Image 1 (cartoon, helix red, strand yellow):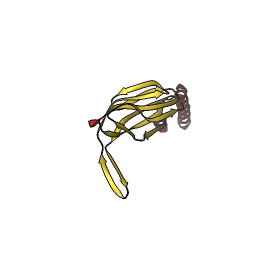
Image 2 (cartoon, rainbow, N blue to C red; image 1 turned 135 degrees about the vertical axis):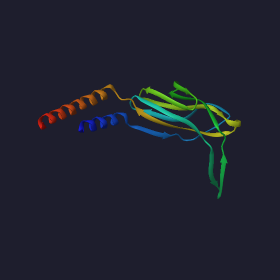
Image 3 (cartoon, one colour; image 1 turned 120 degrees about the vertical axis):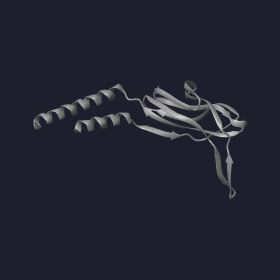
Image 4 (tube, one colour; image 1 turned 30 degrees about the horizontal axis):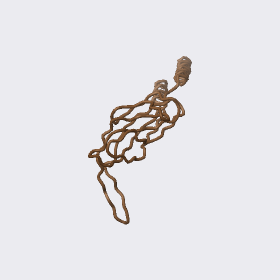
Length: 160
């Protein structure tokens, strides 16, 4: 029974590899816009990036003691791109994106689209970075499970 718990824990550990969710700062855009930078992302190992581009629907604040609420126009995203330096690495049409197996380095997340009515809006994105496990990680996991299986088998033989 304990071996099932060990296998379940190992599987969860492998599937739950470290991931970090991040929301970019807001970039003001107007009219039709192309390749507006939202965030720089740095990887130290091969990684995947998934996320969704969005917009601010209302700006709220205060000025000289007066509070204000300004409704912002909707933004339609046509493309989310990932650049390494000035070179386009990959892109995804629409507002959702999934960039896989990216080599270590620094990338810039950029968006393209248009603001409804040609007004001014606030574009942003939420993304998650997850590391791609190296083949050695799988080998170590399998070796560890093998050792745990051997120990469990040995204990069950001595108990019988």
